[in-house]
Each structure stands twice: as C-alpha cells, then as structure tokens.
Image (tube, rainbow, N blue to C red; front, top):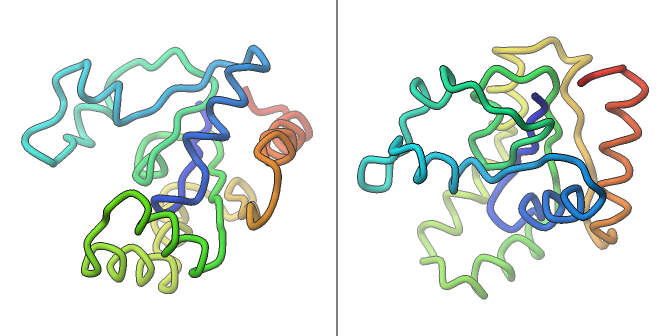
Length: 148
C-alpha cells in the first residue's frame, strides 16, 4: 500500500478521486477509520488502523504516512494556496497556523523518514498542477519502482 499525505488543502482527496476514476484503488483513511470504528472523538487510533488489512493500492490522509507504507507521496503547495483552501473550509486561524507550521517544519517528510528510507519518500509539487497530472506523476513513480 502506498500513502498520499500532506497538509489539509494540498489536494490529497482530489488526487485520490482521480486515481479512482482511472481504475486505481484509493481510499480516504478518514472515512475508513470512521467506518471501522477507529475514531474516538476527533482522534484516529493509528495503531488499530496500522493493523488493519487495507486492500487498497493507495490511501490518503494527513496521517497516512504513519501507517506501514511501501512508499509515501507528500503533496506540497504554497502557503498562500493552503491558507486560502483552509479558510474556504472554515478552519480557525489557530488551526491554519498549526497546519502551515507542520509544512514549514517538514514534519510529513521527517515522520515518513522514521518509517521508510528516503528513496521511498517522494515530494510532489502540486502547486497550480492539474490533479490528473499529479495522479499521473504518482503512478509513474510507483510504476518505475515496481511498487504495488
């Protein structure tokens, strides 16, 4: 299973929908966690989710890189784009700043690096890119590495 991660507003869910439209299995971990009863309040039980056998080629979430992944794709967009998208979703200023700081501090990469070698972690610049192109880039990398 490969993981698509990044901050809220980076395009993870949109790219997952594109992959699905291409016939590639991709699922939202947020939805799966709720369906499986792995959510307590606002918290997802990552340990339980990590033990679940998920029959998808790709999963997406801002915490997907914390699961056992064969590769991690970190979607990145500018702070201006993230801020605008989070404001459109009604995020509080505090939550927006927290998410921007997570990107600035490179947390997604650092946490993924605790679980995988750097050769299996890929930064994808999604700024201004068509979601179809981003999905194509991800599939191209996965194919090149023969990751299933």
